[in-house]
Image 1 (spheres, rainbow, N blue to C red):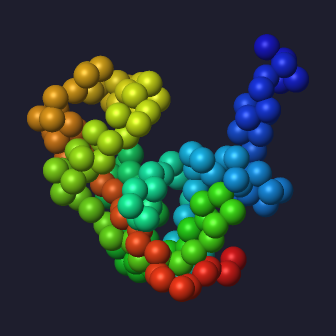
Image 2 (cartoon, helix red, strand yellow):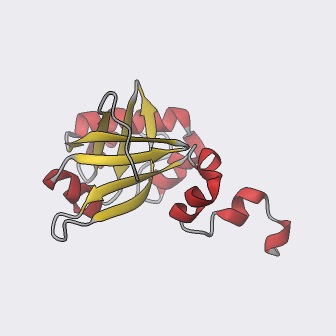
Length: 159
């Protein structure tokens, strides 16, 4: 199918998320993807990573499909202060790395309830059954990690 016949969202998704945010489409794209800026643990330079997220009780929760091996996760372990852009909102926060399978399974259950088709598809590609038990989710969660980002009150990030 020619790209001109695709919906608007699919036309813009091929561009890097930083570009999409830069041209003012963050409020649309940001429903699913945020921009996380960490400090490189080796270089000390800012590192921007687009990630899926959930906003739960004024905290941003990000799951790491690569577990503790994701560079952005390692960067947060070294320096938990982060900058986040979600839609048109920018803020500084503190990231709490989480590797507890029970907490990660809670997050997976939440995501499955909220987006059963998308998350179910992603998890099925990782060998999880279509309707996983709590035990199966906790077993799967042992290979994952997540970060809970708590905004620093009254501090707006400048990017």
